[in-house]
Image (cartoon, rainbow, N blue to C red; front, side):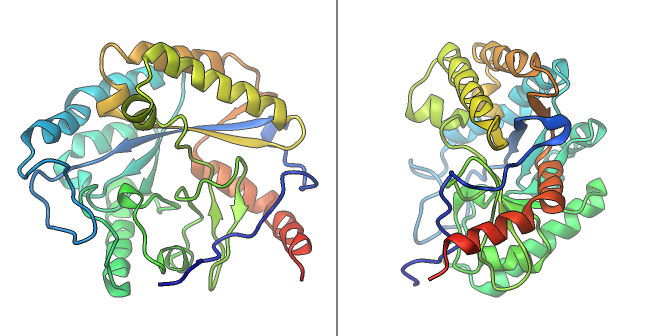
Length: 305
């Protein structure tokens, strides 16, 4: 195993090319609903258990199932209310298990990006051929079902191999959400082709806030607003990206949804000169067209030996 994959270079925030999003916006804002499927008794991975309790874990499995049955619809209505489209982090098996969820997202012109097959099957210990097979199946399945070409990737349960990023570039993915080193997109070091990191977030990820920080809905709403306010200030110098990662089995509960709505109301109340409400694919395409080469050259100039 490599000590350092060297996926990206050091790139200090100062003296970067000054990014401006469409309409001169300071913040590019996107929402990532994770639509996931958790098997009740998945195959064993030698490096990580799928469930913390003994299999079959009926309690936690039904908790996850709540998101697809109830929470997702509540979350989707909140996003509809403020005209925010989602970029769906999709466990590809949902196409077979819950096609009605896929249809609703397609009807709303939401983006889909790959989040593996199941969230209970990890990339650890996969060989290259297995990882290729999963990517090829994902590309084919999403194209057939939605008409969309996959542009982005978030590894299942944030698990990777040493080859993941190189394979994404080889299969013409535009971005990965698996790196958390910056608040703007960054060109990555891959063997061939191009790939950028798309700012996602662990800090305002609903699962982290509710399960690790033990936050309340009101506190979650304030965290999102504080995140936006700071990125808006900094975006006046160089455009930033803000993502709200969501899980319907967390944010979609009745007592939590108003906190999310409050945050959306606040962000969408800003002008187009402040915030560009987009999908991750739209952000990536705009970045490639206008800033990729400038940023790559800037990174190289700052890392010359």
